[in-house]
Length: 246
Image (cartoon, rainbow, N blue to C red; front, side):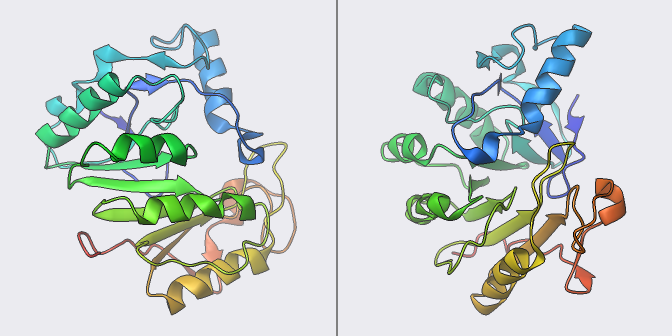
């Protein structure tokens, strides 16, 4: 069975590996780590190692069993391009993706160097949406790597947005997702940071999706994520990229 997702920009999740480790300040309050530890305490299958990076070969064929076209976020509980991920196992993941053209696969990474190394010798399937996380200015180098990789859709996850990103060159980028941090230790996302990204997306004809304010509302008041909602500049932004337009 597919696992339905509460993530606003996808429909379901597929985790052919689990676990990760923190590599930037954006990872500080990782939701996946908290969830993995909770699942381990519950004795959930696949989380015996907690948040240690672990291959899950028994999950590889899951999308093959789903007949309904589905948008999958790949590795919501890990990073597909983790340092310990064998390239031959990655090949198996992409083989499944090629075998299921009815599905769309959204892949997001903070490890652009490994992504680039892998893609130099392999072509990605047409049903892959490929993204990198850009949570602060130093991470903008990931955009330069991404824009030169041959993918039908390239996107940025600007979450959690931790500072003003300044000017963004969105050439060859099709979609930008912005969100604030949630959780008891969440850091504040200032409205002007999100608005600047939104305006640049509009100016550069890039689809914009505002995922959430998170724990801190646009008025700087701490509330539940649900109470703070998803309204930015007077509306909810749910734009998606036009598939296949490069």
